[in-house]
Length: 489
Image (cartoon, rainbow, N blue to C red; front, side, top):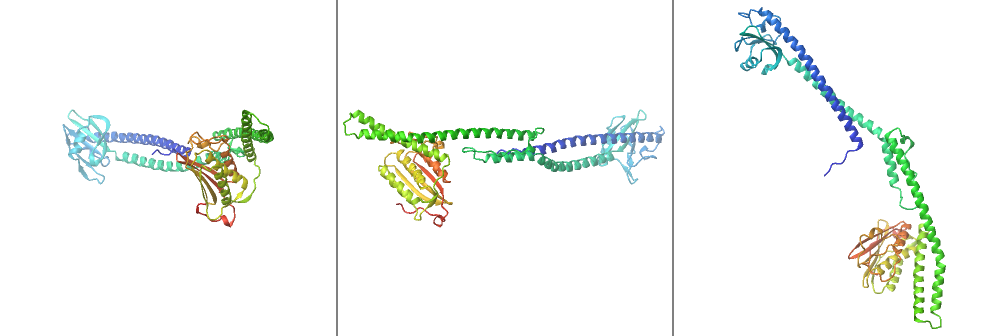
């Protein structure tokens, strides 16, 4: 499972804190190393002075002289040891309480392992800690070991290190809190731009006349800042989108108006063609067989064209927002009439109607709703073979009336489902085409149902297809409670 990406705010805060941490570590390391070097230099100077005092105490006559470490003017825990051959003479020192202490064998061996040099060297003496020691020759066989404890340097360095670590940790926490606040304030204009984008995304831009009034505030479009440049570019993009939507709406309005005008104008000549062809075909004079066939074809095609023109005119009127009737419509009665008509037109199909015992009432245009249901029934009859069972049912759910039209015929091609309710989309070849289809029936269904505030959906599989219409119930006691499908009628 991949980790969610960090937001810009998180990346900025973490970047600020990380940069501050790196700088603090570098400054702290330099400070600690500088202090340690300075204190070691001071300690080395003290070792040199102690060496000089030890040599002065010997008077350059080491024979029979006391150990220099316990001579006069030496600090406690100072090591002043004479080495004769490979052994330390009287390996003793004074502790902080002026008590005489003897070095252990391992401590002596660590001191004897030092090379002869006037340059101070660090040596670990176990329980005594680390010492800075000088090993100088006095004669060919006698040498002098002088050392001072290094614990004061180590304690100072450790204290400084702890102080820097504590101050750095507190500073990083403060920087994280302050950085979060500063970044949040700095990114507020970007948040306002995001809010504008979300409000624009919620607008219905796919159809109708759209006016995008949302814009990024002028205070967030200052081109001198990066966020302002984003805001200005976003406003510029919205202006372009608004222009494109206005042009699209104007073009669609012209097309709708043309379709409405053309459909209206074509109704009269088509009616004339149909009338004259029927009149001629019914003439008492004998006509040749081919002439009678041609006249019948002219009449049938004029009927089909008239139906197409009527459907185009209806869609154009629905698109233009023509007002529909707002009456109480009893869906039970409407479905009974529609199924009866479908049964008469398609007696080779099996028809089943399932209605609740309580009437379902919606508010709308009875004629248009009846036409939407008839189109679904016609679609089921035309695009399925004889013997197909078509089931029609009505129920209520969640304050809506639900009308379903299902058949057990061949399903619809899945590639066709996304565009099934668009205009001039015809059923695929797997569904029987016993009669002609204009490809406008389902488009009219969707337009009518959406004008009534409802929705239409379809599901299909190789074993059948199911259409569902959802319409808001009328605000009346009769439709207040949910009803369940009852006995088939």
